[in-house]
Picture (cartoon, helix red, strand yellow):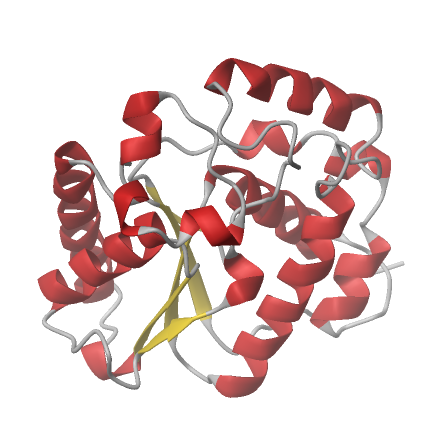
Length: 227
């Protein structure tokens, strides 16, 4: 069977937030209640990373002849992602509270559950081992990889409905962004006839794909074009 033509309305980049205060402290901050606190925003190094990412994004936009009015910055409401998005908007000289920026709860950090919240980063290895064994099984009280896929599918559907012909920068977190890349990469390769985005994502929402999300890991402040 020939691959069906899959055309999205926008071009997409992902940006992991810059180095944050939780990164420096080695803390897992994954709940929305904690994540929005100002005390968990970017560290000074993270501000520099966000500004550098903004310059890199600006350069790529110029290379592709994409005007600034076609740029949309969509970000997780956590303080570290909001701070990152704000720095990028400043570099691009876009008003942060204007119509070209959008906070989206669907882009929030993956919640790892109460037993991992505010614990050391060493605990991540336990989570990722669980993901490899069964990406449909989350930690107690936390989100599985499959749970994150469900809300990211909603986010992508929303962006495709709201914007057309835009360069969309998705500012989020390590786990959500590597999961997003894993499913979009697989969806793009999908051979079935379903052409809408959500159907394609649902079709590739399988253990063999979801368990390998770590292959798409990003460093803090790393910008990457994806589609």
